[in-house]
Amino acid sequence: MTSPANLAAAAASKSPIGSLGACPLRQTHVQLLPLRYGLVEKPLDPSAELKLPYALTTRPLGIRMLRDGWLYVIDSVTGHLHEYQVLNGLVSALLHKGAKVDSDQRTPIEERPALVFSRRSTLHVTFAEVQWTAAKCTQVLDNREEREHFMQAVDLGPVHCQTGGEHLLTVAQGKQWLAEIATDPVLQAQAAQDRAEQEAESPPDAVLLPTVHVSDAPAHEREPYLWEQPRRFREAHIGEFLGRV
Image (tube, rainbow, N blue to C red; front, side, top):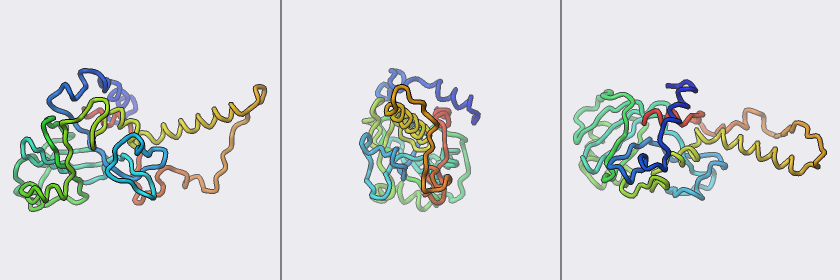
């Protein structure tokens, strides 16, 4: 489902995040669409509105799509480890689900899985660019200290339908701050603001000519996230995520 019409339909068909039917407080389970913390351009610095795990001095820390690799989730309610494969920023397959991992060779058992967990759960989550061995999976399953060292705890109990929670965003927050979705709208809004300011500063009878912006940097160096190596940024649509719901 990659055509613009299908993506728009996927986004438009969802209940508003503030509606009673969509509120996690009224449901026993929640579905997660995993993202990551990563470097973003300054206009998408969410630190004034979101609680971030730390701050950086070079570029802002913000919200990004996942890199390609493997996502690991341990559910405190079931004790199961879930292993997912991530491709092109989205979870593409479930490779394992269970209390034990016996083999290093694990292949997809479900395509495009939904990450649905009980609100009573505390999840331990981590990402790896290299698939974990069975021994590594057993290490975090069997040892709480190892699990807490290598994985991030996410408590689903306090999640709120309008404000999210620690390491948890609402759909509206994701649309506002996920760099791959929000960068183009932010640039368009900035351009519109620049035009409005120019018109406000001009006399009422002035004839406005097209504005030419001059920069010392060549055009390709003014592209968003050019500094990122290897290049991971790609423009995305919220429908890519909501199509999984």
